[in-house]
Image 1 (cartoon, rainbow, N blue to C red):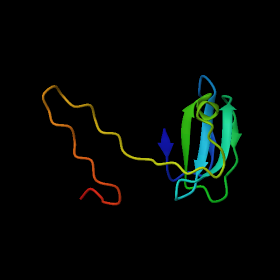
Image 2: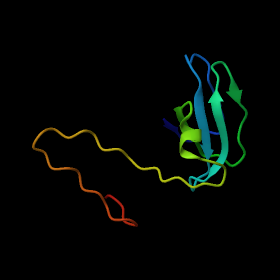
Image 3: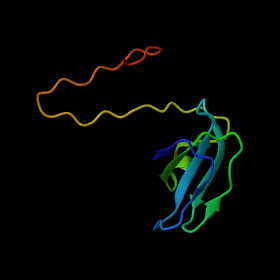
Image 4: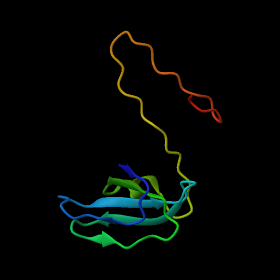
Length: 96
């Protein structure tokens, strides 16, 4: 789950651990907290614009670390049978 704007999180009411990845406005990784247990808090992360909350173990599985840059985009809704897939803009362009 991508939460923005956000500089700090808590895991109150969660049933299990999560990985939390704090990103700046350019989606560079500023801080990684792996396997953050329920009922914990992460203090505000200086320079963070958002946080990516992932299933526990995801960060280790992909080798994510501070300084990496992520590409975050929208996910299209599933299409019904017979529908054309949504148009995907070329890199560097935007959807009106």
